[in-house]
Structures are given as C-alpha cells and as structure tokens.
Length: 458
Image (cartoon, rainbow, N blue to C red; front, side, top):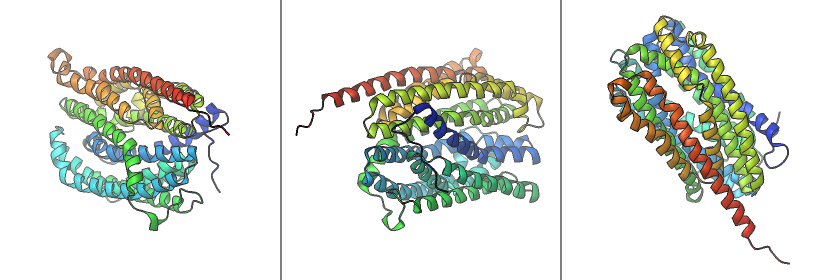
C-alpha cells in the first residue's frame, strides 16, 4: 500500500506535525532498541560487568558516528528545500550523491573504529576489567557503519518528502531480527558482547537493504538509479554546507560527553554501570526530542523553499508546545519508575540502581529545555543556516561542559556526580536562549528581503 505523504505546505499545522512525528518517534525507539536490547540481554544472561562494558562505548561510538549522521541533516534539508521549491534536479542530484557519500563515510568509519577503538577507550579511562570487552564490542559494531549510514541517509530522504511510516516499517523488521539474534548468540551460543554487537550489524544491513529498495521503487524525482549514483560536486557542496556544521556539532557534542564519561569512569565500576543503564533509559525520552527536531527541520525546510515565512513561525510554535508536553510527561514517568526501568538492566546491585535513579532525576526532569533547543535549531537548519547554530551549540553546550569539567569539577568540594549532571540543564538553557534569538533574527531578515523584492510588471 502506498504511504500517504504528510502535507507540509498547507492545511492545519498542529495535527500534521503530530501525525508526521509519531512514526519518527516509533522508528527512533526501535533504532534505540539496537543498543538497549544489547544491554538488556547481556544484563539478563551475563552480569553487570558486561553492561558497563557496552555502556562505556556509547559516548565514543556517538562521537565517531555522529559526524557522518550530521551529513544526513544536509541531505534531508536539500530534499525538503527541493520539494518546497518543486526543483526536481535538486532532489534527484541530492539522492544520487548522498548514497555514495554514505558508503564512503561508512567504510572510513570502519577503518577508524578497528584501528583506534582500543587507544581511545583507554584514553577515556575505561576500567581495566571492562576494557577488553568494550574494545571487542566497538570493533564489531563499526563493521556495520556503512549500512548504518546508508539507512539513515535514505530515511532522511523519505522523511523530507513527508513519508515517515516506511522507515518505521523497516526498523520494525530489523529490530525484531536484532532481538532474535541477541537471544540466539548470547542465550543460545553463550557469547557476550561479541554476540550482541554481531546481531546489531546484521540488523543494520537489513534496514539498509530495505531503504534502498524503497528509493528504487519511487516514481518521482527521488527515485534511485544505480547508474546515476556519483559524487556530484554541485550537490555534494550543498549537502556539506548544511550537513558539515551539523556533523561537527554532533561530534563536538559527543566530545564533551566523552569527557563527562571519563569523569564518571573515575568514580568506579558501579558508577559506570549505573550511568550506562540510566543513559539508556534517558535515550528513550530523547527520541521524542530528536523526532521533533526532524519535524521542525523538514517542515520549515519545505516552507522556506516555498517562501511561506508566516507559516514557519506557526510550525516552530507548534513543535515547541508538543515537545515540551511530551518530554515533561515522559521524563516524569522515567523518574517515577526509575528503579523498575533500571532494574531491567541492573539485576545484581541495589547501589547501582540508586545511583542510576539519581542521574535520571538530574537530567530527565529538565529535559524539555533540550527539546525546545533542538526544535529551534532544527528550524534554523531548515532555513539553510547551519553554521550559526553549530557555533552556539559548541560554545553554550560543549564549551560550558568542558570548561566546567576542567575547572569547577576539579575542586574537591565539587568533585561529585551531581556536579557533573548539573551541567546538562544549565547548558541546555543557555543554548536555548541563544538559538531563539538567532531564529527570530533570521526569520525577520528573510521576510524583509521578500518584501523588498521588486514586483514583476506585465
């Protein structure tokens, strides 16, 4: 059955925003299950040491992968802008440039991961008892980098066109395969982190194949033809102009998280295990934020291409309301049922459960601030401005956190887990204020330029 596209350029905004976002949230939850299922299966059939080993890799993996994931932002914005402006050449050129870019990026990530996994995890002060398992998991995980990026680039194309259910269907299939293989490799064959990493790689290959098939079957300008795939300089520059700053931002964002992870590692094995489990629970709340970020970016992208600037303000307002309500509700539930949720991962340490619950209390209750920030930043990128929001994020979030770790955290009285966790909401609030001021300025400038254009005569 052909999926009905969500109309972004006309019609009611709030209902369309919700209809568009819900499948993205569901798909993101399934994608998150790749890592969560790894930790749950390891926790149930092994012990907490292996949970910490997998969790200790998260910041490093994100730091290395997120740069190329950021390039998919450029793909989505270019396709959305082309759809809004009805520019078939832009849409086709973007699609046929993005897939080779994803493949090359994925192969490069594989090489980097295989060579530098061990040294980087040692640099992060990963506990010695966890290190061999963390290195093994990371190396196997990066073997699947190319299919991971291919799926995400292809899904960015579909979502920019208003189709959000197909990526959900594909991740449902690959997610079921991932969980089944986790059980077979770990529970059946007695493997540990190597089994769950291998299951993730296979599931990523499945999702990549499905999204490629979807693009090949299209009947519009975004139909994928293998004979036309190449790195077209014109469209590559457009993708990189928007995606490169987003990728740099994501990577540097992860650098600050790596430093935070290193600081947490200094508190010992229990702290690492608790933080890994709490981060995984927190990740389920974050999918709401990431989904509304994509919604804001793609809706604004199409309307910016069509030059519907009054509608852009209404789109952002609707996204801000939705993300705030949804994240406050989800974050509150995560805190309320923290011991139950963390108990899915941690089965042998009440102290680790308490420490994980403390992390959730400090980060998930004010999480709506990050949701608002990401919606505004997504709207700015949808208007083809990617460098400025990157700089704001680097300074207000990454810079603030790194500066805090290097100064305040080193003072003995503030060398605590709370001192680490409090940097999250503080940095979100500062960045939100800056992004909001930037958004207002860009939108006002675009509207003024349109009003000043000469009217055609005759």
